[in-house]
Length: 218
Image 1 (cartoon, rainbow, N blue to C red):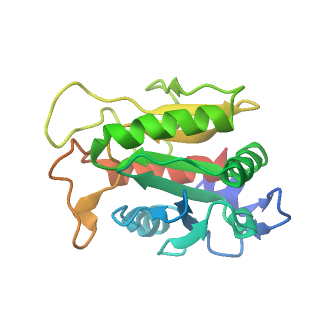
Image 2 (cartoon, rainbow, N blue to C red):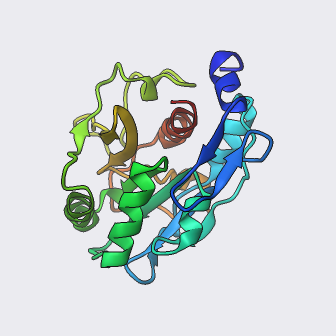
């Protein structure tokens, strides 16, 4: 990873629709979205940000910044996280902003916290309305996202059961949304949070490391 892929990041300057940009000499900032009014993730571990810095040549800020989905500030971040455990409805402005963000360079990591079926149904409905010309599709295990930093041969669930899959949406041949209906929250690295009632992906930190590095290098 310290070779060609890191060099690709070091050579890049990213520009999003809102006119914001970030370059290789600045630490990568990642946002935790506030959406549907006041909903946000309170239990999605940001430990993978530190892991990316340890295991690659990519500098990262080590904490999420809370950012409203309907704000212009959204476009200052190359990578955003959206998760939760309840039903929700995005506003027209939030859908418009998210569509612009995803089709002009941004990357969304979304996950149903603790495998919440209510949030899973809501996310599928809202992303379908936001990107009606795109479809969530299963990501094959041969995809680069499974081997960008760590080689991930399987997704392990805390309570067992059939192995889950990751889903994604591509825009112009590039993956811009990665979604898991099982929790990628990595609550083992959070304080005051657990996933007692859900079937969380226990190797989530390694998965999230790969996702962030993939988003920055492809």
